[in-house]
Amino acid sequence: MKRNTFKLAFILFVAASVSATTLSLIYTVTKPKIDEYRTHTLQSNLKEVLEGATEFEEIITDTLWRGAASSGELLGIAFKVFPKGYGGPIETLVGLKVDTTIAGIIVASPAEGMKETPGLGIKVREDWFRDQFRGRKQQELLLKKDGGALDAVTAATISSRAVVNGVKEGVERYRRHLVEGE
Amino acid sequence: MMRYFINGILRENPVLVLMLGLCPVLAVSGSLRDALGMGVAAICVLFGSNLVISLIRKGVPPQLRIPIFIIVISTFVTIIDYTMQAYQPELYQMLGVFVPLIVVNCIILARAEAFASKHSVFASILDALGIGIGFILAIGAMGFFRELLGNGSVGGKIILGQSFHQNPVLFMVLPPGAFLVIAFLMAAMRKWRSQ
Image (tube, rainbow over all chains, first blue to last red; front, side, top):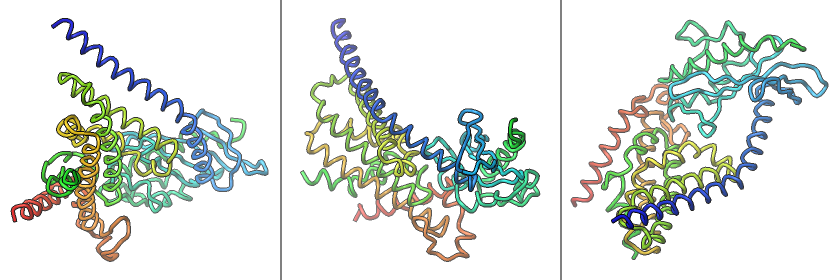
């Protein structure tokens, strides 16, 4: 009986070790590729939310960037906010122009950890929803239901409201960085 | 041999007859694209786990079957997750969300336990493909009907007219719609099988 227990424990130990070794190998091989893709995506996302900007200076690691045109002229800032949605935080990248209007927003995909309901809350990623933010000032950021001008995704008010409030709070928090040297 | 393959598709359809893996089928079938994504991700893991488990089946003591199967399955899920992220990032943008969910898909463990641990490698591969296709058909049918009625579209293309798309049978893409559609599909399946 006792011998048998040891034998079973040993077999399980071997199985777990093989699995762990395989996984660490796969991880080591794929990690640089994954990071490279992430950096690449971030750069193209930054360029999309802050149109015209080509040079991005990171002010707060992975959270706040200042974007300038190739001529060096400051165009605005881009920042990430993580408002709480229905399934978890909704990572949203926001571009804010020097005149304090929103230049654009991008909502992270499920693959990047966004957990809104497929078919419902996930629609806050769609172009028509994101495009509504363009050119808005901070005080205009409200859903129609709450007396504002933005349409919510049908049957996904929580997700829609989260994104709207997240953008709004982000503007409030990071606006001061629009002034150079701050 | 071929019957192992054909069985899983209709006669022993994992979802509509064996009633396995209902959780992902109900949860991720709001649109055709999501449903097919889940289906493709599941068949990949099913293939890998059935293959490995039938290879090692003689070395696994009966008391350790379940823990070892779970190690094999979760290892596969993680490998697919990383590999897809690294080499097929565009595909991962679409399927990535479904990959971790496969761990809770009991079809995989059920086939490992009920089939792959008792059959040859070749038979296990055929079984994985048959069951996988059966799963894709079932979840795809769910996604098709729910998206059609709940959004007026198929695969994102609006086909029932703009006015229906503006005002669809919204609850079909919500959880109650999932239960309703699967009930109809199961009823149709029983009818077909009893004839």
